[in-house]
Length: 223
Image (tube, rainbow, N blue to C red; front, side):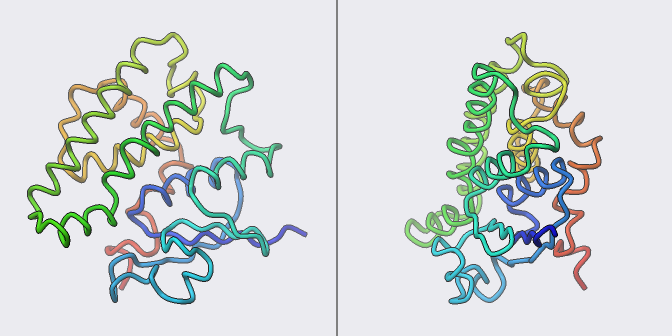
């Protein structure tokens, strides 16, 4: 009997968005548990939630009684625990290294500088106004996307997706970050390869169903 998979998620969290895509590609049924990162000071700060994740962040994945934290670790767990379904990493060491490098530009270099905790810290500790916080966000997205575009456009391994013609960990990270870029009005015209890959992926149901606006806790869908 398959154990229940639960994903603690916030509709607009790009880290949770990644895991939703991965679960869909792996064709795994899961129960989504919304965690609102803003209401009542942030539900992720409650004592009950901190027992599950002392960091007070999303996502968390429960596979039966086992608790997994950090989106990249969760995705790698899904790849290893459910190998018989859609592969999220290529077959050779060289290809896997390239995919992980592309993914980590987003997950390690862009996203951590733009997330909600950083924005709140800039506001609280430095009285940084909204316009300056958005400028900060755009700067780091542009820095990362400039490198990503160069790495993708000038490599024979790039196909319809970041690596070949099938989505991988790199695409799982890229698509949510493009969502963030659009949210913060980043000019995407210098990144034709990135936007081409994004549009290809979003035509797949596994990506489309994971989109923030399609989540049950998205404002337009929550009464």
